[in-house]
Length: 325
Image (tube, rainbow, N blue to C red; front, side, top):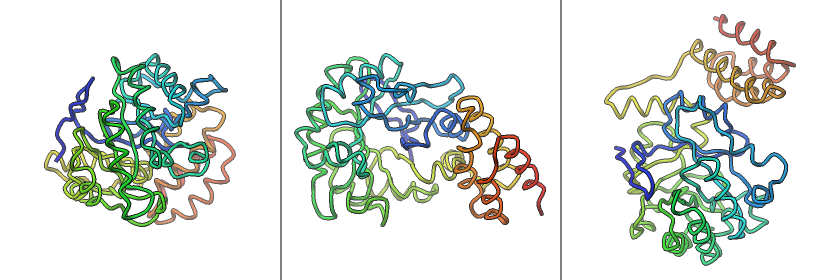
């Protein structure tokens, strides 16, 4: 189902990626998802304007840990080729071997500066960005692009965008099967990805609505992609990567029970205390809410979790919830 991808500077043995997600894919989460079987992860999306000017704590988003068992990559967003090139150099200095360019984010905070999915409207600029980055670090790292189907269903903006960035040096293309107008609603159209990307000469990665091993198989088949990227389901259910690994080896893994979920949350809390000590119990609220979805008593647990004033109280709550019948 998944075969190695050959990029310019590396071979991705199992082309399965945890998508970059702002506010989620920080160091503690990347460790968690790596321990859950994900082979490649991304940092949170990093602003090239802030990074190139060394604004505030932006560079801290590039920090990685020797506790990460997955391979961490980095994603940048921006619309100025010079700032993107400078930021790519900084990323390579930090040890990254793959720098991805976000050309798919539909959030206004990103698009108002001409970044994200707005670049689909300007394929020449998109190509200039990749060209500048490739000239800056192409000898040392792969430059890749993540984008969408288009602005609306039926347009073919993906084709000129893909042609431009590939000609400029992009060594892999990831396509989310939704349009800009879809936002994060509707359904991902994997078949449309395959129809528009069939002429591209670089590895293709499919993204959108991959929620289980079965949907992964369908997404790969319908899109013709060689790899897959998982976003929401990956941070809601990080054990999905172990389930996919089990399927790849001919086995089956069921969803974890309450005891396993508590162990996962305690491990995540431990990592948050290590890397984000002042906010550990606050950050645990969203992850705990995701991990306990669908469990009996989960709603009451989440209400209590949101009221916990510190990590000690979170641990007490987890102990009590584990022992509930």
